[in-house]
Length: 129
Image (cartoon, rainbow, N blue to C red; front, top):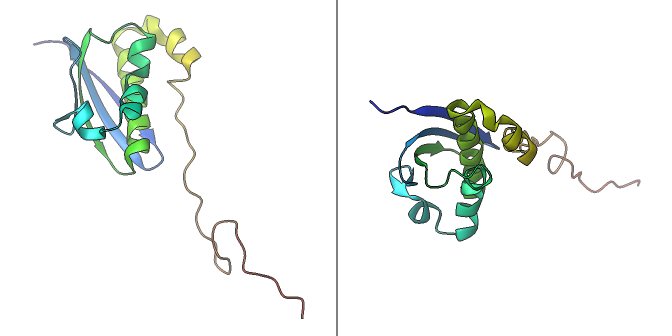
């Protein structure tokens, strides 16, 4: 059996489970090709960023299952998962991935709405009289 490496990526409310194995560069997201799933070229580039930086675009086949969030959050979650899986496959890539900021989980999530207010920060108009 071929070696498979696993990484979990997260961004906002999106969670991506990523498996990489030696291959010729095919990326499958929820049983669809990368372009079929995202449609936008920009999000495909975001997903491939860690592969480009580590010169491993054509070295691995990538299988992803992603849930939650929107397309942008899912793309960033996949990027994070791919980075962690690459790190498992070759620990020498740590410095390159760390310098690119791919191993840091972007922890920004939506702030909750507070009671007595219009939103998370926005308040109802204040009347003095």
